[in-house]
Image (tube, rainbow, N blue to C red):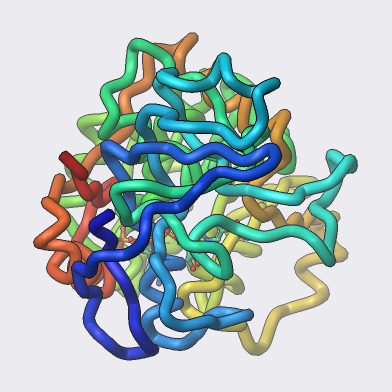
Length: 333
Ligand SMILES: NC(=O)c1ccc[n+]([C@@H]2O[C@H](COP(=O)([O-])OP(=O)(O)OC[C@H]3O[C@@H](n4cnc5c(N)ncnc54)[C@H](OP(=O)(O)O)[C@@H]3O)[C@@H](O)[C@H]2O)c1
């Protein structure tokens, strides 16, 4: 099979021939037809991710057709069009993942930037016919993260004022679509005027450029304060987010692209009775609910660019440069 491989950290993503996987036990081999990138793949290449292992075929997101299974009990899956849930070994709790056994497809196990991938059968979910293979591949990691952050952790309700930061990101663009579908009033931030325009076209009420020194005051003037803030950037922006959240409001953090914050005003947190919530990926139940939500609301993921396998390195650089709005897809013919 042809696979995109990271041979070591800081190396280019190269297209190589690798042996086809052979399904054993409760595993399935999926012929991948489309895969998608996440910021995780860029962190792995930069050597900035826990549990690094090289060489590795990265990629957490994929859709395709089941080629073979390792156990006759799973034979009904063969030939089915599927989406792969990359959130593996979550465990039985709905409040958090199993801290020992939890892992994400695409490191340490080889991922979806490949003609074939081997995954546990229990990570397969039928692809809704309303989605193309590219749209289905866009969904898993970012859609699951956005869904849990927004609804399971953030308890987003219709009519609430929600702020989603860095809307160009994969998770953030899903959070925007999901919050709008749920009837929330959504404000966004971005470092790019073009991305703000695109978010407004999708239904955001207003947006600000976080590079503009007056962005906090501008948001306060336009929106007042927020019931719910969804953020994956963290860093020095957190202080402003605490300011922008209403007393008793919720802030959900799913990432720290800008690193850890310094100088957090603890008095603001306790005096305003703020609820600060962390969120990571989601349970198998969250994944199934997310797919059903997307299907029910007729949501089509925002796709930035579709690249070929030969353009894998160009695709990853686009992610590195942060130029995307929505998901970067690799089509695998
Ligand atoms: N916990 C989890 O399960 C989980 C899951 C997925 C991702 N993550 C983490 O969440 C982060 C985003 O992931 P992703 O895959 O969505 O990445 P992505 O598609 O590369 O998006 C990153 C986004 O961060 C935004 N950003 C950069 N600087 C910012 C700032 N100062 N203020 C606000 N936003 C800023 C940018 O938004 P603009 O382009 O609009 O400026 C950029 O698009 C990463 O750190 C990732 O590791 C965590």
